[in-house]
Amino acid sequence: MGDVLVVRNLSKRFGGLRAVSELSFAVREGETLALIGPNGAGKTTSFNLITGYHRPDAGSVTAFGREIVGLRPHHICALGVARTFQVARPFGNMTVLANVMTGAFLRDRRVDAARRRAHEALEYVGLAPKEQALARDLTTIDQRRLEMARALVTEPRLLMLDEVMAGLNPTEVDQAVALVGQLAERGLTIVIVEHVMRAIMAVARRIIVLDHGQKIAEGAPRDVVADPDVVRAYLGSGYVHGC
Amino acid sequence: MGAVEARASPRATRRPAVWIGALAVASLALPALVTTPFGMDVCVRVLLFAFIGVAWNLMGGYAKQLSLGHAAYFGLGAYTSTILLIRFGISPWIGLVAGGIVAMLASLPIGWLCFRLRGPYFAIATIATAQVLMLLFLKFRGFAWGAEGTTIPFLGNAPLMMQFSGKAPYYYIALALLALGLLTTYLIERSWMGYYLVAVGEDEDAAQAIGVNAPRIKRDIYLISAFLTALAGTFYVQYIYFIDPNTAFSFNVSVEAALVSIVGGIGTLWGPVLGTALLEPLSAFLQSWLGSSHAGVQLTVYALILMAVILWRPTGLMGLVSDAIRILRRG
Image 1 (spheres, rainbow over the protein chains, first blue to last red):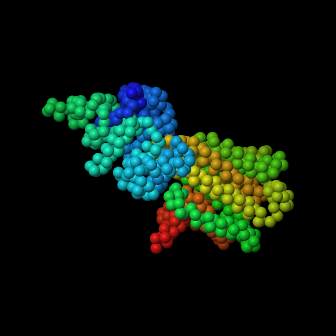
Image 2: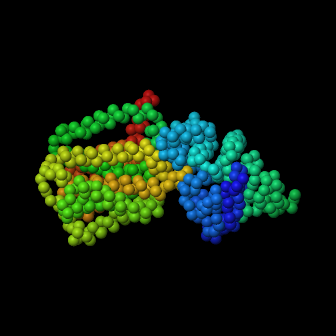
Image 3: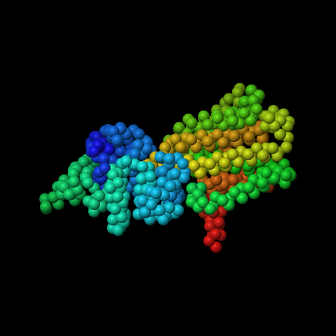
């Protein structure tokens, strides 16, 4: 099993703030890797650096053995890295179907083929009954489903999910977990940023913990949550002495 | 927008064929019914500005790149064909295409500069490009007649030189241009390009995340929009027999192009046509009625209409029409 994504010494400053510093990690083919950490730890910034939305100050990112720093987002997507956004960003005035068709055109410019493939993707995420609705009328969970369908229809080999479960109720979280689990079973490599610990424990094989833009822990979910450094990052140092 | 929604129901595509047929017959027969030159002039202007609106709408409407500098391409089209005609004796029919190509070439550096900006900053930058071109042509005294401009030599009835004794041929040329613009829009709207344009207009970052090459699609639609706008410029000069920088690069052309689309329904196939059909006769009427005593009154009315549309009906007249159809179907 090779590494699908290799991040080396990635750094980014915003003014005086070190958003990400010297971050290195690798994602193995077929695994589900979770990126966790308190607010402002640099998770979303890392996503933006990897997918071409921000340019890193230093470091390299290789996807499928190819350097992707400096490539534009659409190019990175064409190489097989799809992402979703922390706040869902549907094309509000388009129908759900048209939203997903837009993604489908990346691999096939024919409208009929795009419609068919978009429909399949919507079936897969369970949004097919609402494909004629306007995207802006969708509920939060459905907007997340739409983002997933739109990403999947670009036929990614690596899927990067940025807090797809934020704002969902417990039942919806279970549905989302099941969906991510299904994708992982199909062999898709997934990097997921998440706050909902229950979801992370259910889907992730491996966890990387970020704090202040740096990696402070890495390993199997059970080991990571027991790590004193991780507990300190989330709860403050007082709690570590307590246990 | 409306386009991508409309496609949702396949039924909606059948019936318009009848309407378009009826509309085509009516517009072909119109010159036989309108007898006064003033009436014909209004008709030609409606078609011409509808066409400019359609050209603008491809970029400003579908991709929401609100350009207020389309006069740049209108003027380049006008000057290219006029210079070819007067300096080299080349027919405006060839000048028409040459003007379009010059406009396309000009749109590349202009787009390269302006597309770095988004929203209102983009709009302001495009205004500047049209103004700069106007200043340039004011300076080209030897080659392009400077501020005085020039008249087009009158040749009588010379169809090969795009000159006609009556107004009807001009009407049919403008109609053909509009048909070309609408057909182009229709084909783009139905293809992957239409989806990409609307997606870029909705959320450029999100579009890039699913593989849309936003800079390229914006460049491409700007090329097409500039080409079509230049055709209107050539035609307009041949129609009024006069050119000077203030007419060719007039800010009014830029504004009108955006205005008819916004009032009619931005990002819809028929929006600019509907908007022009309302605004252009209104403006002609107001100018002939009040223009001498209350100069500028039609601008005031334009402003009021625009404010009303943006406040109450951001989807324009097309939104009004589609709402009405929905209510009728339900009832």
